[in-house]
Each structure stands twice: as structure tokens, then as C-alpha cells.
Amino acid sequence: MPRMSIYNPDTIAAIATPPGEGGVGIVRISGSKVWNIADSLFKPLDAVPVSAREHGTFAYGKVVDANGEEIDTGLALIMRAPKSYTREDVVEIQGHGGAVGMRRILRRCLEAGARMAEPGEFTKRAFLNGRIDLLQAEGIFDLIRARSDRAASAALEQMEGRLSAQFDLIYEAFLEVAANLETTLDFVEDELPDDVFSGIADLLDRTFQSLDHLLDTWDEGRLLREGARVVILGRPNAGKSTLLNALLGFDRAIVSSTAGTTRDTIEEGFVLDGIPLRIIDTAGLRVTKDEIEAEGIRRAEAHGQEAHLAIYLIDASQPLHEEDRARLEKLDPDRTVILLNKVDLGKKVELDGVEASLVTGEGVEALKRAMAEALEKGADLQAPPHAVISERHRHLLIEAHSEAKQARAFLNVNVEENAVLAAEHLRSALEYLGQVTGRQYHEELLDNIFSRFCIGK
Image (cartoon, rainbow, N blue to C red; front, side, top):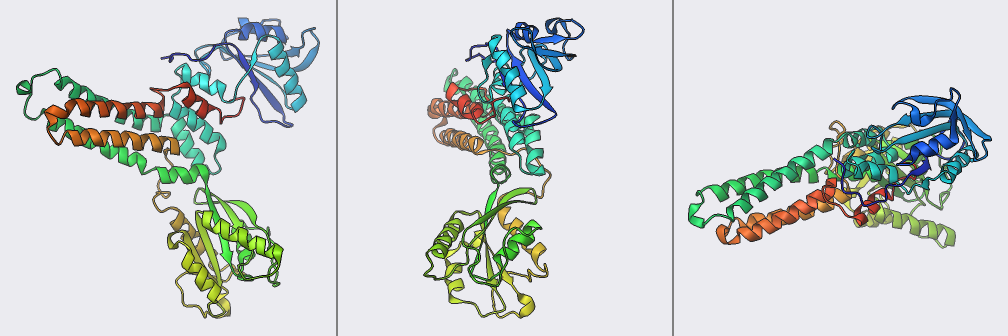
């Protein structure tokens, strides 16, 4: 069912394809004036107006300016409400790709009475008109921004409503608990069955399990959406640049036996077990009087503090240097993988870590497994891809969980006297849960979500 509209249902238009050259470009138009606008700028070769055509059909013709001069040739796709993406009447003009051509068609739409769409406004209208909920809208955004196959699969599940269904079950369970509890307020204490409040408490306890299960997916969701920053640390000539090249599968960093070759950070994208990573090669860590090298070392140390994971390289063919020992003591062991490189030259370091010879490729696969294990703590990335919560969902779930816990506490002590207070906390929990899917929303919430979208979506 359509939600209460908080926008002016005028007609909007935007370029729906990425900027730059391409075989096809699309301008999307949605709203109450779409037929007048489409008829004024698109002239089908068979002379049947766009407004007279059936839903789901194409027309081939030309796009014309206000004077009837041809701008482009292409197709018009007709989508009639409520069977369109926005559940409004929609026409998409498909012309030849290219920045100038698309801008000319869009300008013609605006001249004919459309308004430039705001970022995410087409998807916002799909939500307001009841086609999707907020979770599905965010799934669309995540699919567009996905940086790995696993992230795309998880986003697709969210788009299809799998995550919404889980939230709906929790919401309905809380609603049932609240309704049962508020029903007791209308009865005199002696008229209530002895087990009524224990039954309400049991139902609430079962609902907590579902809440906790969803909260457990946050670590995985964070990794899939945001990726992880992995920094390579170590003294000069430990093999950091060689490691970067080995992970990437091509020569990205200059490898040299001269100490201090890498003076600034080098960043590259990499996907490991479905996790998008940002691998950062850094300057060798040592005491130096060279100002440029010293700045590179300062940046390396800063990246080490901010990264999700640090790979610390040690030249295992030499006795452990005191600088290595001191720096390892400062790193979080849960966020650090130690790589003992150059073991083919003999091992003189007694530390637990992954043994490798990066010049031969030995140990690279073992390192990848160790990296994945460290990153996957708290996230089951070996399970099939599934929809996972975001930071927004997590925040609202924690608030709902807190309110429900307080309600549960009131059911433990003087339940008849505290039933009103417990009911109030349950209503607050329902408000937080309702904001996840959009059962309850306000303009600031919608602006925060849809402003991140591109203009044509």
C-alpha cells in the first residue's frame, strides 16, 4: 500500500546511465505529466503517440527540440502505473550514449515541464509509493556499490526482501507481546490467569534470540560494504613490496635491494574470500635522518594504527632486530599476521607466524588463509552469501534490544504494578524496529538514506 506522501508528486527526470561515452544512454522520466512531456519531445516513426501505447512496449522514433528539430534517434520505453519502478507513470528515452546527447535530451525534458530529480529520488518514490521498504532500497544502493561477488549476492538478497522478512517477524513478535501486555491492563489483577505474564515473558525471550542472530551479522556486513584496510609493515628490505606484488599478481611496487626504495604509501584494491580489501604498502620502519623517508615512516605507523589488519614482515634469515621486537609489542595480536620471509635462506627467528619465501611464491597461499581467518573473526564468511545488517540497522537494533530488555526486567518484579512501564518500553522498541524497514519514518531519515544514491536512481 502507498505510504503517506511527504513529497510533491510532480514529474522528475534524470540521466540514468553513467557519464561518458557508450552505446546507449537513458533519460528516465516519472510523474503525473510524463505523457505530455514524452509526446512533446519524442515522435514515433509510426505516428502513434507515446501516451497511446500499452505498458511494457517500445516505440522507435526521434527526439526533437521545441522547434521540432531532431536531437537524436532512439527508443521510448513505456511503463504505466503501478507496474513501474516508482509505481508512477514512467517513460525512458533511450538514445545514443554520450555526455552531450544525454544532456540535450534531459534539457528538453526540463523545458517540457519536468524537474531535475534529486539523488535517489526515483527509489525514494518507489518507497513512498509502497513498492519497496527501506531495507530493500538500501539493498539497491549496496548492489550498485558492491565490490565483490559475495557483496553483490548479499545485496541482491536484501533487495528481494529476505532481510525485511526477518525484521518483520521480529516486529510482529514484539507487537504481539505489546498487545498481550496492554490487554492485561484492562483487567483487575484477580481476573487474570496465573500464567499470563509468564507466557508474555517467554514470548519476549524467544524474540531476543532472533534479535541477537541479526546483530551477529553486523561484522560480516561491515566487511562486505566497507571492505577492510590491510597495511604491510616491516623494516627495509623485509620484502614488503614483493609481498604486495605477489598478492596482486602483477608488479605494482618497485622492488630493489636498496633500503628505503618505498618512501610513500602505495594502495591497491584486492578481493580475498569475497572481502574487498585495500592493501597498503608502506615505507620501511627504521630510524632515519632523511626528512622524506621519515615522513613515509610516520605515515606507515599511522596506517598501522588505523588498519583492520596489519601484516608485519620479518626477514627470518637474520636474527630478530630489536626494532622489530619493539614494534610487534605495540601491535594488537588479534589484528596482526606475522610473516617470516626469506626462510629459504635459513630461519634464525623463533616466532609464531606464516613462513614464506616471497621470491619463489612459497607461503603466499598460507598467508591469504591467515589473513582471511583474522578478518573473519565474528563473521561467518564461509557460509553461503546472505543479507546482512548495516551500521544503521545495528544502531536501531541495539536501541530496540535495550528497550525490550528494560520491559523484560519489569516483568520480573511486581509485574502487575509495572505492566504499564513494560508496555511503554515495548512501544519504544517497536518504534526503533519500525525505522529499519520504514514502517515508521521521518523526512530526515529518508534524506539521510536516499541522498547517498546517484541522481538517476
